[in-house]
Image 1: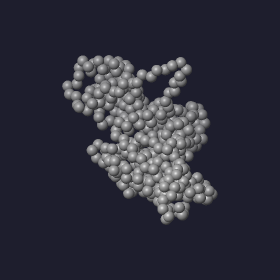
Image 2 (image 1 turned 90 degrees about the vertical axis):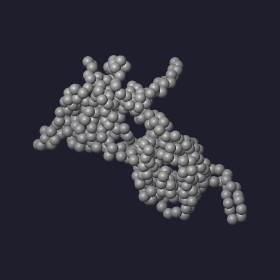
Image 3 (image 1 turned 45 degrees about the horizontal axis):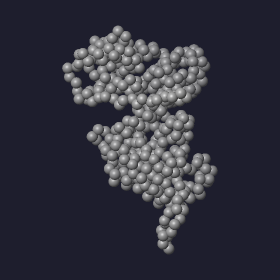
Image 4 (image 1 turned 45 degrees about the vertical axis):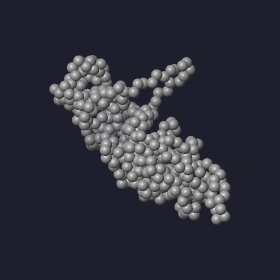
Length: 439
């Protein structure tokens, strides 16, 4: 019998830690190789963690709600082998205790464990869980930076936050009676009054539904985006008659040959990628006073989940894929998004986003930008309309398939001319679609 550690796996380039949501197995349970053992959450996606070894779950080292760094042990598995593999490490709480003790001389500790540093730690990393607690409790960044952390490299943990909140009132009184000798302008702005909570009346028979974790995250990101970016939206109506006829003619043969559905989405993504190549300054991000012009064209597509929430997987280098490749990528990402099987890397790195509001029967919409991008395009429903068309014998009225394109953009760096020309160029590419094109 050998003991091996189950480590928190690496789930993406930018993912350094994850929160344990729930254990799917209990101590003493038998585990098969590649069988899911627990569910974890990052700031991008929820996912299940499989075991690399078959055996018995001997000990759980990370409890639900704990934030664990990538590569750290979360459980010990007893396997049938002669060698011990990697020796089980002590529980995560042991190491931070020394760090907290070493940091004690530079921090003021209260009787119930709440700790406050004398100097702020402005360059410190904060986990999504800690940030969420700070937001829910109304703790500004200036105050968060003064909390002493017991985690690795002085990071603030959930336990530090809870301990601090228990004694926050007393610390606030002490701060009011003995203010710091110097206060920066950044701290003053961070301590500005927060928006007042709106009072909601609740009547008999009303149902109270608590937001799930993803809905809370979406809500916060939407509020942040409207606060960060001044939104402007331009609208264009496109004639997509050729696309509708071409798809109707090719969808059955494509299904037989490729085993995938041929939808309108990859055609729209192709047109957007072409328009971005024509106007590369829409493929930018804002970093303070700098504009970062992105080299790659990575297009995110909003996908509605069965829960009603939205998730945005990203098609990387969309301009390098042909229509068949885009169709397969769109179908794969959409399917795995609904099955909760996307990786964090597949939800990051987008430079522009599309949202198909037409799938809900809407003719147009005013989408909210996905930060730190500066543009998002809403695709309306395709509707038959009478329209004036030019013929060799003069103008005539014909039935055409039309749709509205709604382009929301960040007016800090995208002026109306650029924002309008981008959506007009997308419409041009759609209207020039070759009816005899091969796929």
